[in-house]
Each structure stands twice: as structure tokens, then as C-alpha cells.
Image (cartoon, rainbow, N blue to C red; front, top):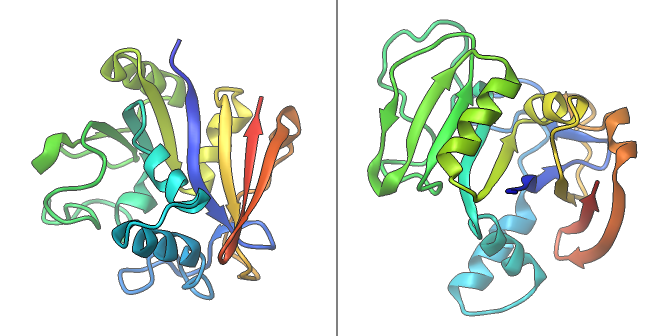
Length: 205
């Protein structure tokens, strides 16, 4: 059976997946601008043909993945009812997912078909129902719970996540969207790898 996994999610030293006051010019909120510096370094390394564990993790995100689930805050800086359908995500016309991507939201809108095979489905259904829809769309491949932290915690608490690849960045946000949850005690640490501007923890149920 396909796995449900969290791939390359990053938290601060004090356990937050984002800072406060997320907005268009600061998608991860205040004091969180360097949270994903490890990823920026890895993307540059990959562009230059450098192989290392961080680059491997970037590539692993798409390896065998057939569907993604994310929260509304990851898709958009806008809150509340959609004023219109002009917002099409942070990623341009060709988002990096290239498969069915389900956006959890209380405010539905029509499916959004993008270049490269990505279709965003906006849904307020229970998380278990969304997961079953994602399984069907993934057709035997893995499903990634992409974030943000509150979306991941919902699936953690429901016992629906099989593995987590978690980066801890040397950043202190002081407040924001907390990732750390008692449900993590159901996982064991399989490996720990240091990379520039982060430490990778592979967690398995």
C-alpha cells in the first residue's frame, strides 16, 4: 500500500513551522525568513551538479508521489472568503507538484487546473475523506501531507502518517504555527543527518 508521508517539512528550533503574521511578502511569517535556507542552498547545489544529502531530500519529494494534501495557508496568503479566483498559488503557472493536490479550506472554489499536470482541488471534507480521495488519485503511489503545521498535526493526531522527513533549522521564531505534538511519540528516529543550515531527522512509525 502507498505511504502517507511528510517530506522535507522544516521547523524552527523552538518547534514552529512558521512565524506569526503570514502574508504575501512574508509567506512564512515574521522571524521565519531563514527557516528554509537549507533548501535554498540545496537548490543551488543541485543546479550546480553537487550531490549531497540535502539535494537527495529535494529529489525525494517527487519520488513515487502521486498526490499532495496541503492547508489553505500554504496555498494562499489570503484569508476568509475568496474575493475572486485570481490567486493561483505561490508557484506560477507550473507548480512543482504535477499531480492532484488537495487544499483543505472552509471556503471552496472550483478546481484549478495548472500547467504540468497539477490540479488544485479545494475541499472542506473531513481529513479522512480527503485522504481517500488522494489515495484514489495517487493510484498506488505515495501521498504527501505538505503542510502547514496545523494540517500535519491533524493527520498526526488521526494516526494517518507513516513517516516524516523533518528538518530543524537554526532559527528561533518565538511564536507562530506550532508543529510539535504529543502524537510524535508514536514515531522513532531512524537517522539524523546534518546539512548546511539544518539537521534532517527521519522519523518512522
